[in-house]
Length: 247
Image (cartoon, rainbow, N blue to C red; front, side):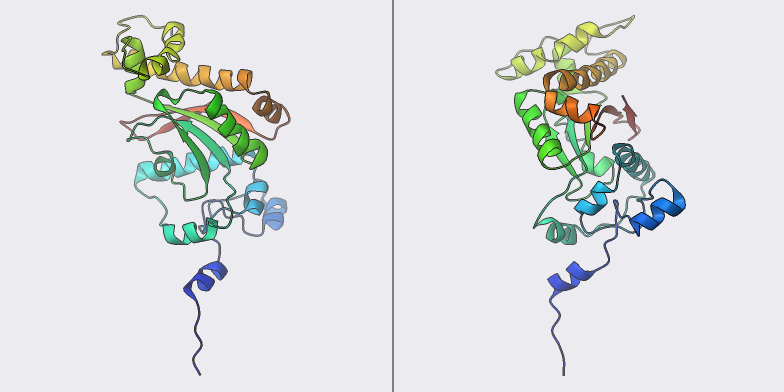
């Protein structure tokens, strides 16, 4: 007599392999020290897996994912299984604030999957009240452990702020970047056509955004003081594909 096995049930009982997989968490912690989370890929990140990691370990996973991306060796993924596994609940490990630039998709360049991170995207990766509220939700209510602000090289929003561009609502957005232009120490051509200066301003903008998150959100600052969350910055190089983490 044949039996019917629902593909959804098969997916549910399949071994959870993945980016954030923690095989035998307690035993690994005792036997090998720092948790190893590069094993077989998970269908979706679970709460237990996320809670077993420190903020520093989560950033470490992002770094190794970017290294795989740069080598052209990204992990094989079954996005349908990730979608199914995360449909009933999500447990992202981090919240990223990045630019809308089409060439800098965080999940791709750090080899992440569905359900791994919250992602806020806005031109120039600036913070505002709505972004802060989203981050507070991600960390305080949903349990994310890393707040990462990621800028990138050759950023159009940075160029616009340097050039004092004006266009509808974009004018006000660029005004929020201009303090970074003024604060950037640079000997040489301080124009939007000098890419070395543009990239220096982009990095300064990330540094100032990280500082403003701590200043403007007592919720996030408190979580960081308690060691529950790490707030950091990063720069993505469009030419090399490398993400430089700092802060």
